Image (cartoon, rainbow, N blue to C red; front, side, top):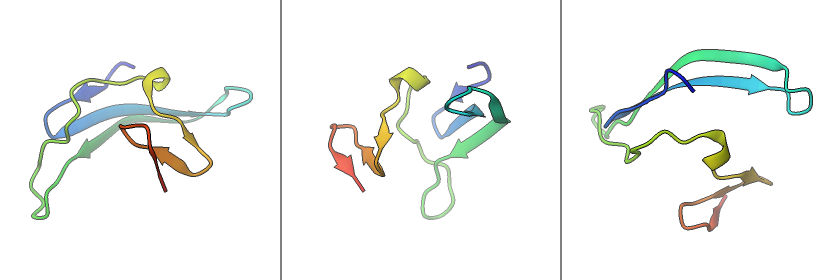
Length: 74
């Protein structure tokens, strides 16, 4: 996706929400910036080094989120 950037303390993304059946676009957000902050509001490294794409993201099913080691968390 164009416009996505991974920096040391921030992630900049573009998001699209689509209908799962028709694939019609419902919503587009052109720019979202996430910044990792410490307890004092200062930027901190988030730990990501590359952009991941939808096909590479971990699945979320039945309210469970998978962690990096493959286990599930509520």
